Image (cartoon, rainbow, N blue to C red; front, side, top):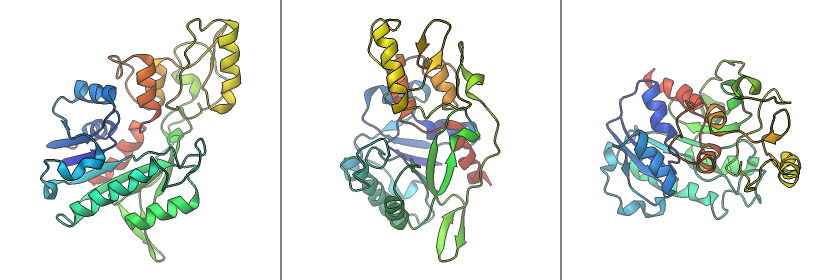
Length: 285
C-alpha cells in the first residue's frame, strides 16, 4: 500500500500495518514535532517526511497512487479536558485540512481508504459535523479492551462499512476483551485502580527532587486532573517509560531513544497500537 499519514505522531499507523502483515510501498508522513520525526525515522528510515499539513498543495506526491489516508487530527478543542471550542477551534479545525486532502485524493482514486480518530468525550454536535463531512458515522472503541488504560475514542473509517437506516456506519466490531489490568503492566509498586486513567500528553512533572514533600503533594493534587499514579512503599510516582509504552500497547523498548518526557508526550498524544492493528486486520479481509 501507499499510505499518507497526517498528524503522524509516533508513526503508530505504520507499525500497525507492519504488525498485521500489510506490505507498505511508500509511507508519507506529515509531522512537525522534531522528536516524533526522530522516533519515526529510527524505526522506519524509509518514511518520506512531507512536513506541515497546511502546505499539502506543495507536496511532491503522486496523489492517485495513495491507497490509505490516516488522520489523528488535534483533539484539544474537542476533549472534555480542553476549553471546548469545538471542531472549529484553532487546533481541531485542522480536521478540515484532512477533509480537503481526502477529497482531492478521492477525485483521483475513489477507492482510497481512510481512518480518522478523535476523542470519545467530544460533543455530539462535533461528532455530527465530522461524520457529515466524511459521509460516514464512527465506531466507538475503548482501548481498555486491549490494554490496561481507559481510552475512549471514535474511529471513522471506510475499511469496513454497513448501512444503518439512512446512514453509512464504520462497521468495525468491538475487539475481544483481553482482560489486561493496570497491575499487570507496572514494573514495581501497587495501584488502586483496575484500569489506568487515559495516558495524557502532559503526564510529567518538573520537580528535580521527586521524593520531596512538595513534589509528592503535587502528584496527589493532580490525580483528580488525570495524573496517573503508582504507589511504591515510601513514595508516589508517575508511570515510567516502559509502563507508558505498555499502556499504549507498544514493546517496552520502543521509545528508548527518547527521554521519558518526550516519550510520554508522544504516547499520551498518540494512538493505541493494538486498536489500530484490530482495525487494519479488516483491510486484509
